[in-house]
Length: 403
Length: 228
Image 1 (cartoon, rainbow over the protein chains, first blue to last red):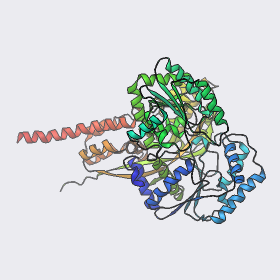
Image 2: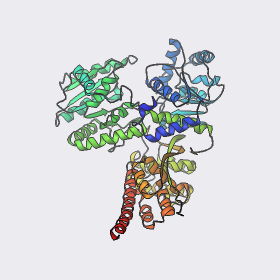
Image 3: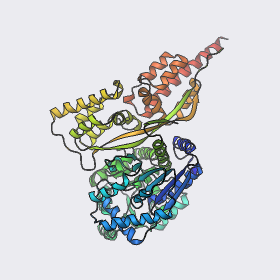
Image 4: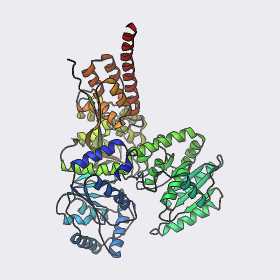
């Protein structure tokens, strides 16, 4: 596993990973989340655990179990933390704790370092036996429902440290709060290099012509991703430049609004032959990869965004990306250097035209984008950061450590 | 017996971001938090701006925020003009930042607020320093190495060294001075303005200067051979 990243990830990240692993050799590192598959957290853990093991760390990944009542409650907690109005009653919080309590009886919670992912298993801290415990928050908690956030923070403050994805998600807490950006895996199906045959397969599957430049947005059919705004921008561009627009997304089964938005988008596109609306099955990583690789310009014109890792995925393919200046997108796109940040339909249209008319500029921005992702948003950097945090917590009080 | 030259060991540092939990949504709040935060926090938002190695529109996070989020362009220009390496300690730098903001607030007492979600977040860092496994025993080896080390290593030796050793001098020129006494080359490297270049730009300038020196050294050998 580790060798797969040689020649891809920055050499210094791999070197530091090995040095930290040597210092933490044979120590136990336990990760706990609430699902074995599906979602970004499970995806990262599937990759990270074998890498840690290979580096000589005794890494374990456990998953808490719960019934549908438990997961209904945690879904509500999740939504409330992301700003949706939800009522979490005392009984619900009590049930949340009880299920964690039952899991604590079954799970071996003894480890030198324990990383608890997201709110579902957060109460496990009450059953801490040994080691350093860290709570990792993967969700956007910049504008949470206050009382839900306050309740959860009672658990979080018992940890040795918390880890957030973006600085603005961090809260005023009495414990260490680290910031670790999410990451993409360069060797996964979604991001690995594809053969010409694999790309052709996708193109013929969706019957996409390649005789004109392609503008692409990959995202769920969600109003916050502004698919209508993308079509509006495309229509402005199409008056000047002959090109094709692809809007590709998977149906979100847990989002009842998804279908409504998809229908709105279809209606707005009005059977325009230059617009391709692709509804992809849930596991379409290779097709998404191929679409990103054949695109000339990629958009992520979000109006609200958590981190927006699709931006890094596109940048990794050396594409110029135009993104809405929201959430984690400005952390990935340095305006004018690794892409363009926009605030309006007109802004997006202008940048598309600018890039279509300046292929050299598009190429340079694409190259900068890939390098920016290589240095900052690959999974090896995330693993490096976790080990660094563990190591620094063991050397508390020092802000500079020399290996 | 030939004098033993201490090889130059290339190192690198990485920083793990830590939130202080403090935020500012307008200039007055920014000012008040700057006055109260730790030295590490001021250090991160000023000196460590250069590790980002990108745009040269601004030279510290405060200027960046004033320009991009508050759209107070004149203030961002004033703040960008503050060279952290001019100060002997963080407190003097902190006072300069406060002075510039106070002066601006006197002239424009009601600056705009940042949009919700665009507040200034005060952070610190934990820094890990590690050797990258490259050593140079002479200038030719140094020249090869400086071309290939990562920019994080250039940052560590060119920027971070100025504070680490408290003398405002980078590691590269210090080693060249101590090991070879090449004053002209040392001065050339020290004349590179850290404010005016990206990390890649710094690398290019150092490479150019060292390459010229190595070429001159080789030509001396050439001339010796010709005279034989």
